[in-house]
Length: 241
Image 1 (tube, helix red, strand yellow):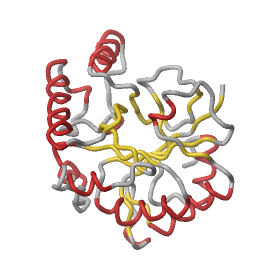
Image 2: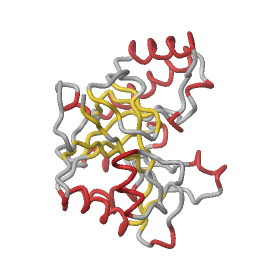
Image 3: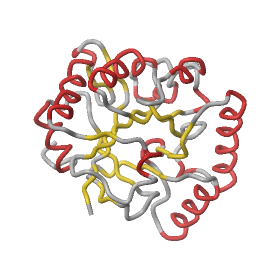
Image 4: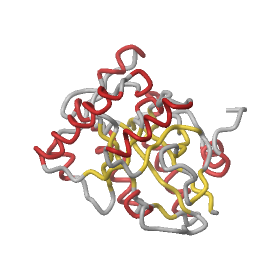
């Protein structure tokens, strides 16, 4: 089995002075993408992985949560420049609004892309996925509430004819982890036709995936320097970070 690191990004900012836990500067992001390109990493969309039984040795998945406008402004041009693919995960309730769930953290709110902006993203570079409807923690929701959340996602997808692949990034990386609650949750998202479910985990995956609903992502933070980034790509998050 091959190793497959899946990187998790959020916001991108213009100035290094604005970096924080969830926000990487465009300068650092370019250094990271340049490293991946120079070292012959191959990026894939989840729709491609679904059809694959094996991957090249240097494979990697790039993911961005929340479809903020700063990703459109700063990340997309770099993806185009370095010929990399990425998955952008949509919190459907907030399309055209702001990431107001961040208020509790004290961080400034970021604008979320509009329907028009989402539809104009180049599909050969960006694949859209699910980040729930209301950006709530799945562990706090009942089965009926999760079902209703999916129904609202599908309503928006249908009303606006969005092209969204059924890969689901769990908000906050949160989902029921124990016993029957875990099994019931996976049954529910399977019934809603999700192909993949992404948590955090901070380790590379083995591919083919051992559990398609517990795929691990590696959290790339705004203050990670290039050395830390290289180590995360290879090993995941180490304790010294």
